Image (cartoon, rainbow, N blue to C red; front, side, top):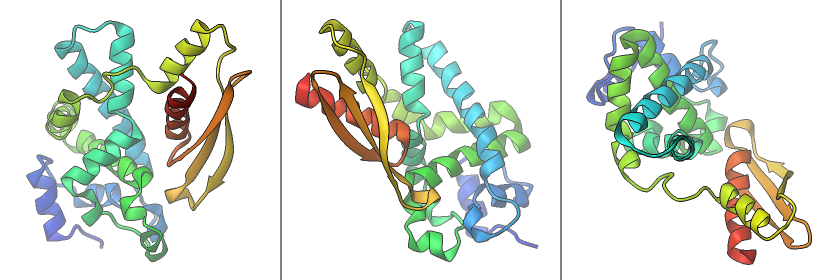
Length: 223
């Protein structure tokens, strides 16, 4: 029977997770490339919702912003990039279980993989320890991110949309013009175009991040 490595269990408990069902936590740390029947995908699905509710509650009680401002901050704080950043900060790359090829391809430092595993750990915590205990761990891990500047400035896509409207231009159009790499380390290239103004390409680990970067670069060039 597969079990957690002792140092992995100590690491999880040091973060504030309460580990009793070791197979559940093993599942949360296991990538599909290992070939095991149980990997993190189902737990990631659950953890994504737990994280969203945890952060939304946090913002509601600690921010006087309007709904639009709260939504902007929420989207930034639960984004793949934010999840991956938090995963790196707590040491997830040292404990993720990957197949040899995926590890050789750099999956241990992939935003997609680390973001998914961060959410899978929250899913495991919710199943085993409930929402309140998981929310408390989220507040600990996301503390610096929430108290920082993430999501406080206007999102680049919103800024570009408003710029186009203010200059009597058609809304910006986004299209995927390229995709490279394996699924766990995919790279997307997106082109944003504003008719009669210009176009800009950008590449990132997800379609959403590529669109955001393209909008940011467009505003730097044409805004």
